Image (cartoon, rainbow, N blue to C red):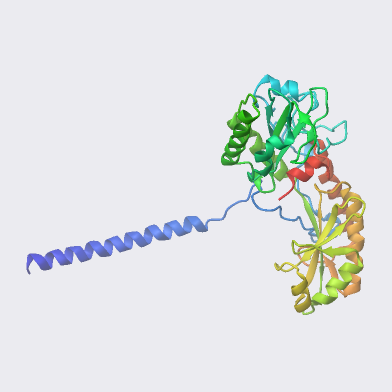
Length: 395
């Protein structure tokens, strides 16, 4: 046997061993990827999942939509971390504290579990507990048009600008056409919403935008501590993930029945719903324009005028977003009646997420949980339906 043949045999053996080893490595890699992942409320990068009412074997023991951990030692009180929101700390300089004297008096106060003694702050105010603030004090009063670059900025999180004529005046939300001259300006970037906490890149972009505007005014500029702001954002996001509850009531046609899209649209519009661009029906409060609850397809397909004309569905879901509703318990009662009427009209059933009929005991349990969810929000100074809640629980 020649040396060439021996070399080829050895090379073949090594190749077989290499292929076997590579295959084993690939298998182990796939097994690790396939391992089950436990979901935690660390981030809200995806829209909040609704909490469906689900009945146990005995409806009297129904847990409905419990979305929080109960503390048995405190008689069922919700467990909410007391240190989840760090104090605003060093945003920029001590001048921020002085300029923001219309904000809550206790700058060290946090969104801690305590019943607020006043109504939710108005939307036309900087909110240091959920926003990163940067103060600008121009050498001379400036018009709002001087902030044109800031109004056009797109950072990935809501950016608001406020101004006031002097330290004794109220803050005013600024837009490109806001009249007047302003001696103090505050730029406010939301720290968290349902898309998750603000990122380092978004904070960098925010600081860059304000930093570019400052010398044009001119105004002194001190950037915030980004590590502090990121920590506050992550804590805020964790808290909101704990408190994010949506209640769904399913109206379903028994198999093999279905609901024609044209029939569904007629019934929904007769009940006061209107088809919205987002692929769902909305029930809107006429006086305020606020969406009280929505109606969406039980199937994954979104509704549209065209799909409703051509297709059918086996059911719909009434959805109540607790945090975004000023009176969630009252609205739940209203939504329950609307769901019952629609189920009767369509010859469908009102069921839980396991397709079991909902009875009055179950509805009472769900109603109690809606109230508890609202109280849990208020306990950390997030009034349901308030500007603060609408900001934190937006997508």
